[in-house]
Length: 181
Image 1 (cartoon, rainbow, N blue to C red):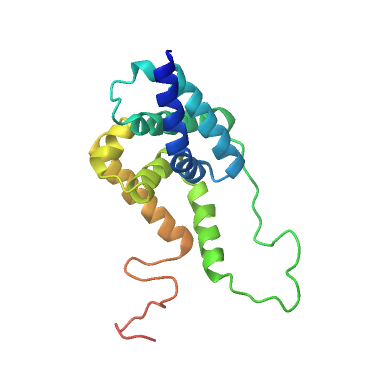
Image 2: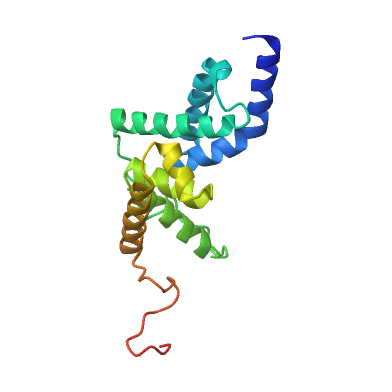
């Protein structure tokens, strides 16, 4: 690789590190694993930097490499993490309890981690990266119909696990007569 390619790659890493790290975190659910995934991704992207056909969009290539690497790692290891409902230490007495949003986000992440890698990747790319279904399909090498079905199944699983009925929020109690309780 010549000096210009090295400079282009360095510029890509500096400009895209945070976006790649966010996506990796959503795929892995762990900050350390996410950083390892980004580094492994960048090693592979660097190795093929001069052969990337779409030089105008190396992020798309890197994201696909990341999703594929994460799936491979998940298939090889399949280590389950044991999460508990209780914090490791009790909260300080008298401390304010403004944790509802954090608790909901943690519960959502916990449930997302139980999804198979492809479902999780579809949700991350579709809703976090805000990609259209066709771009998600291209990034994962699957059909648009598969993206739609995986998205639907994943959202149904999330709703079931979180106890949310379609058309309601977790803070709104469902009613039988159509009027608020």
